[in-house]
Length: 119
Image 1 (cartoon, one colour):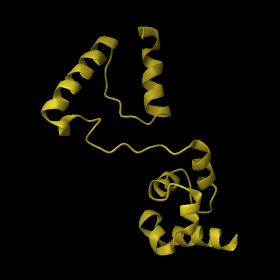
Image 2: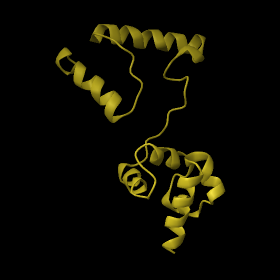
Image 3: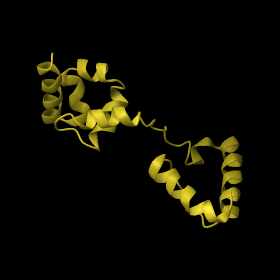
């Protein structure tokens, strides 16, 4: 990777892939940080910021956009729902009680009504 693409790669990593980005100013600093993280991983995995949290897998964009169209669900709640209910079928079969911890009572009722009225 050359320096001319470094900034674009940083933006792509954070905005498009949703990955953690540690502030570095150059390609050299980034490579030193990667080496340090690999070395720390063998000593104490909890100190590696890329391993400290479970990665949230980004659902397919079309599925995400579909769930965002459900009344009461937007850009914030859709990924939360898809973490708990990874398919439309699972989401549509979820009870209000199963939905409430994820989105709250009011939105859970909207989602349940959306799927039950369509049947």
